[in-house]
Image 1 (cartoon, helix red, strand yellow):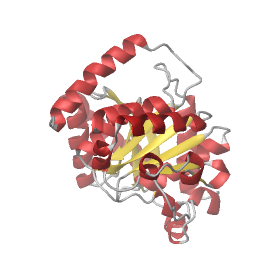
Image 2 (cartoon, rainbow, N blue to C red):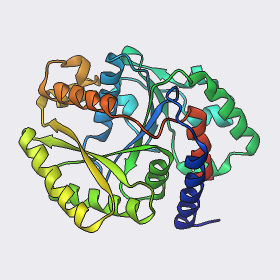
Image 3 (tube, rainbow, N blue to C red):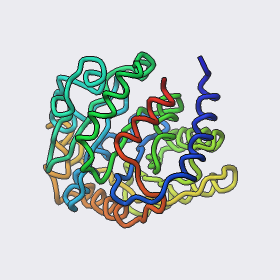
Length: 292
């Protein structure tokens, strides 16, 4: 079995070929990986609420909860799913049976437990699964919510997407871990561009100051271009929403943090995606390629 480094190097080479062959196709969804250097930075809260904000703007969003074994997007959306992606692959469940439709029509595909299960998928199972995914073609954004930290799973999902959003907080440990992750991404040449979101800020100024401090270090030592996506305020309404298992964007739409996320969603929509998109099938073909 190839080690993690060799798999990632091979994926990078295949990506170069795909980029040369692919033409711009604006009808395909933008695939965004959201990750963090450490847990507890509010990653899943951001994913769920920014998906709702995008949906409110008329976009159709699918969340793939790829934090295998530790995913909690379903909890934040107030659901307890019966099935996950592996039930489609191994137990012949339909897309309709597994995909959950939440607030304003945001769709959630639960990831299940253990990325190593992808290694058990046969070619016939993979092809059948890819064919079933055609039911999800009417999607504008696929947001992949990964686990935290530097590991094969996180790096693999970063490699599978076109866009990377890295979440940090003003805390020194969070910034250090975010830098470590970005350093590894840079080392394997998985991405040369990332958007930075600063969460749990006292105000807008702290968000910008934190980003500038982080960006200065990255510019000095890494070959990765950064863009400031915005900040999310420390807000008690967010805590109340989590406890009631409701997205804060719907339970407290006038809260400060809700306005922050709506501004971020506007930025995401406003950013041109010059590389085009990939279909849901393309995404999972890449996932099988790197994890099997």
